[in-house]
Amino acid sequence: MVVLCYCAYSNSQHNVKSNIIHTNSHQTVRTDVSYFDNELLEYHFSSDTLWMISTAEFFFYPFGRYHNVRSILAAYPFMKIKIEPDPNVPEFPVYRFTYQQNYFKVFYDNETKGMELASAKIFDKKISLINQVGIGIMKSDFIRKFTHKITPEQIKNIHVIAFESGLYGVWHYYNFENDTLKYFWFDSGCKVNKN
Image (tube, rainbow, N blue to C red; front, side, top):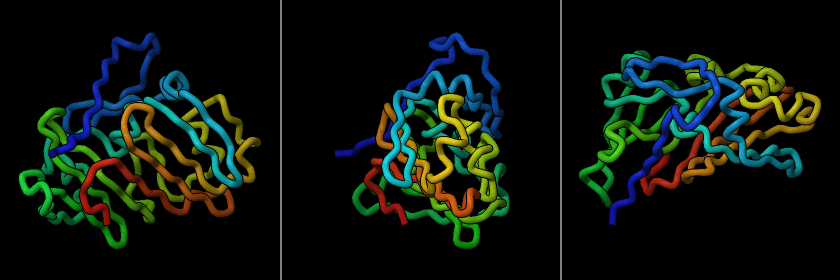
C-alpha cells in the first residue's frame, strides 16, 4: 500500500487579498497574516508550548512549492542533494537536501505533480522559509507573521511554538531561547526515513 501526501487548495475559496510569494517553480503559497488568521482553527497553551492548528497551505510548503528537484536547487544553490531510495516504496525516492547540519527531505508526488515535504531540521539562518522566518527572528516578530489573535505578551513564557495542519499530518516545531528562534523542525505522516 502506498500512501501519498496530497493537499488541494484554491485561492477562490478565500475573500482575503493576498500577498503572494513567487518561487522558482512558478507556483505560489500565500503568506499574509490575514490569510493565516482566517485558516487558524484553534490554539491553546500547554506548559511552555503554544499549540496551533491551521489549514494554511504554508504548512505543507514552508520552503515554497516546487515541481522538481532542479527548482529546489535553484532556490537553495548552496545545499547538497542526495537521493535516498526507500526500500518500502522504491518507485518514490526521497531527496535529502543538506547544508552543514541542516536538512530537509522531499519526495515527488504524482497526484500533486510536485515535491512534498517529508521532514526537516534547520539550525542555520542561511535557510529561511518563504515568509522570511529564519533562525534569529525574535519571538514577537515570529508570532506577528502568523496571527493577530495572539499577542507577544501572551507568549512571553513560551519556548516552543508548534503548528499542526488541520488537513493532513504535518507538524512544525519552532524552538526559542531568550525570545530568539534557535532551531525548527518539521515532521509529516509520510512513511519514509526522516533523518
